[in-house]
Amino acid sequence: MTDNQENTDAEDASPSGSPTSPPRPPSDRLPCHKSSVCSRSYFVLVMVFFHVYIINVIALLFYVHYSSGQEDASRSSDAPSGGQHQRSEPRRPPPSKPDFIRDVSLTRVEGIRVGHVQQVALVPGKVHEMKTLSLKPLLFEIPGFLSEDECRVVMQLAQLKGLMESQLMVQEGQEELAKELDLSPEEIFNLLDINQDGQLQLHEVLTHSRVRDGIWLTPENLREIYDGLKADKDGDGLLSLQEFRLLSSDAFQRFLLQRGVKRSQLVRNSQHTWLYQGKGAHQVLQKIKERVTRLTRLPSALVDLSEPLQVVRYEKGGHYHAHHDSGPVYPETACTHTRLAANTSTPFETSCRYITVLFYLNSVDGGGETAFPVADNRTYDEVSLIQNDVDLMDTRRNCDKSNLRVKPTKGMAVFWYNYLSDGRGWVGEQDEYALHGGCVVTSGTKWVANKWINVDPDYQRQARYQQLVSHLPDDENDDDLTLNADIQNPSIHQDL
Image 1 (tube, rainbow, N blue to C red):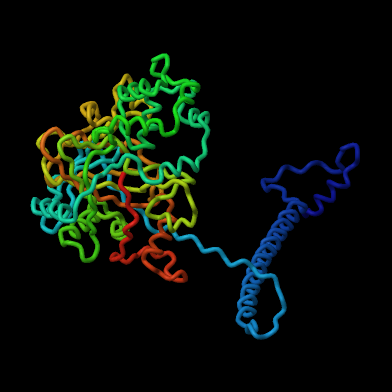
Image 2: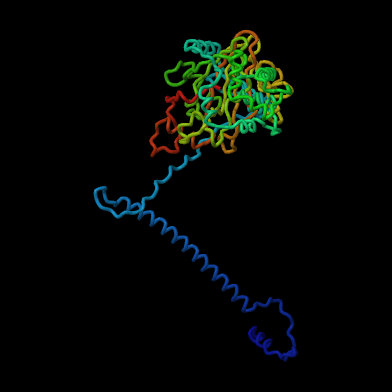
C-alpha cells in the first residue's frame, strides 16, 4: 500500500475511532506531511523575493542620489552668464566650511613611575637621561640639557636686548573690565563667598586680590588693611555683607598706594625679556628650539609657532608665587595665541601653554628652587591651600612645605604638561597639580629660561590658526597642518 493510500484510509476511519483494518506496525521512517513541506517551500520562496526586493530598493536609491547630483552639477555649469536673463530661484546658503580632519595627535612622554629613568637622544653623538619627578603633574628633569657655553650665550643675549620688570601694580585694562562686568556689591560678595556661609574668610579675599590686582598679601597684611579701612569692626577677621559694602572696588589699591607697595608684595619679583628663535636668530637659540622639539616629540609646526624664549633674572629676594602657566578654557574664554582665528569676541583670554620647558642657566648660591606645592597629592582643593595662616602658594615663607622642590643646576631642564590628555590624542582639561612657583632667592642671582608650547584645546581653532598664520589658501590644504616655520606671531605671548 502506498503512503497516499495510508493517508486516505486514515481519513476514512469511522467517527467512533474504530479502524476498518487492523493497525500497521510503526515504521522507522518519520512521517513527512505534505502541509509542512509546502510551508517550508513557501517560506523560502517568500524570503528570496523579499531580499531581492530590498536589494532593488537600495540600488534605486543610489541611482536617484547620484543622478540628482549630476543634474545639479550640469545645471550649474550650463547656467547663463550675468548679462542674460535667468529664472529666479531661491539661493541656497553657501556650504559651511568643513571641519578640519583630526589627523594629528599630540605625543605624550610616558612617566611610568616616579624615579623612572629613560634615555633620550637630543643631540647627535650624545644620550641624555630623563628622570620622572612626578606623575601629577607629569614632570621630568634632564640634567645637562644645555652646555655651559649655551647658558652663557643665552644670558648675554638677554642682557644685550635688555630686561624689564616682570610685574606691575595693576595690569592695563583691569579697571575697564571691572566696569564692564557691572556687578553690585552683593553679587561680588556672593562670588567671593566660596563656601556660601555668608561671611568672607581671609583666604577668600586673598585669592581675589591676587587674581585681580597682582598683589600678594599675607593674612597679616589683610588684617592690617581691614584695620586701616575700619572694615572689620568686630576684629574677627571675617567680613559680613554689611562690612563688605563699606569697601569700594578700589579700596585695596588706594590703601596700598598710600602705604607704598614693596616689590616683595607683588606676585612676581623679577626681570625678563623675550628672545626670538625663528629664522635669522642666533644659532644657539635655534638649536635649543630643535632640541625641545625632539624632547617633547611634538610636530615642529607647534613649536615653531609657539612663544619666543623667555629669559628671567631673579636678584636676591626675587621670587614667583605659586601659579599655573595656563588657565582652563571655558566657552567665554579664548586662547591668547588663537584668539584671532576663533572668530568670536570673548571677554577673557588665557595663555594655552600645553607644555612648559624650564632651563636653569646658572646654579644659585641660596634658595631659588622651583616648588610644586601639591605634586602627586591625593586630591587638589584650592581652598585648602591656605589653612591656619599657612599659605602653600607663598614662595617667600612656605617653600619648604611644598611636596616637591627642584634645585637650580646649571644646564638642567625640567618640563611638564599643564594639561591632561583628552584620551583621543589632543589637549584635555587643565592639570591643576601643575601649580608651581619660584622660591625666594636668599643668596646670589638666579637665571632661568622658559619655552612654552602653545596648543589650543579646541582642535578646530588650532588648525584654523595654523592655516591663517601659514597663509594657506582657503580652498586647498584644509586638512594640512604643515606650516611655514619661518613665520612668527609676536603677539601670541603674554607674561604671567
